[in-house]
Length: 386
Ligand SMILES: Cc1ncc(COP(=O)(O)O)c(C=O)c1O
Image 1 (cartoon, rainbow, N blue to C red):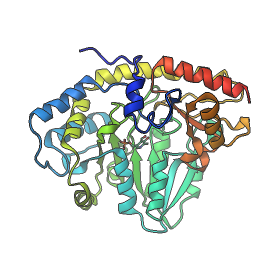
Image 2: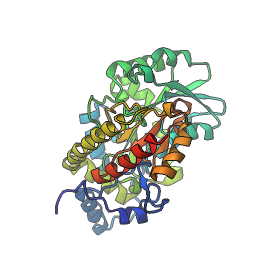
Image 3: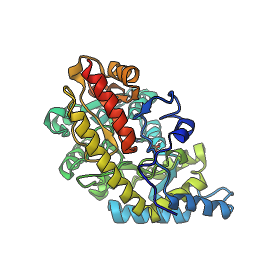
Image 4: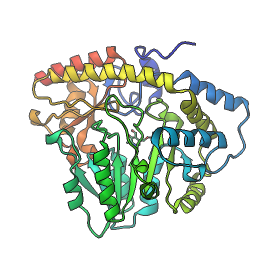
């Protein structure tokens, strides 16, 4: 079998099956919105699932995860993330999103404050805090100053009601990879105020420049006060399989595990087989994917930079661009509507990522060059007409 061809995107298939990204739109529309990859899944992952099917893995499995999967997860956590995890510290879950829900549901009480570090952020962070009747407090990213974290601002937002510090790193939507110094700054503030940290590190494998450091690797104390979530939806292109894992050294983990069992019993056995295959044999695919995505990033940034009025920083990670479109005199929602009507290109409204995202749009470049070229031709034409 051959490697995935990242230039072959089957639009007929996507319009039928990519229910969130492509299927809602007529077939003359190009969707650069929802964070799917437009490529076929790695062969190794398909084979891992087929093996599990043929082994008749139909009985209930272990609550936290199947032993061989937890072994692969802990090996990766120790080797790559430098997180000293054993299976007791880990739980397989049905998607990264489930960890965002769980942390808000389990730790936030009505009236508590959760600091989003930084805002803008992946919208479900905000929704789940609100669903817990708590208050999201944004620590805005410093867009004027190289997309740096503003730690003085973060300090100033702590109140007696602050309970949780929610960190997206690498950052959706801007693609920042936070430096060791920035992470140490967050850690110092969290420890001084005895805050729990939630670290969403889903994009750890999608790095172009810079080095990803896991918050929970910084010290033994931080391992205990941080819940980290990693997943497979993005770097391995299998969001439909709904599989991820969370890890913490916190002494609340035993109770948290019971809560998870009360809701889902355990994560899907076949999805866990996919996770194991990704961890044990997904690296060659990932390397090829990232080679392709780097070219797509550079191409799309270059095209956008040629359009008067757009400012587009180069992301260090993730399949996203987050260009500033404020100079066109439209809100970001109006801009997404305009591009939908005029260019038939779907992008995301930056304001959905919280108030600090107003004035920006998010573009997902995880597709083939031919699709990006057509989308950029149409976008450029529409924007030059304003
Ligand atoms: C930062 C972040 N966390 C979580 C998710 C959800 O991932 P999953 O499909 O694993 O639930 C996404 C998806 O876009 C995301 O960007």
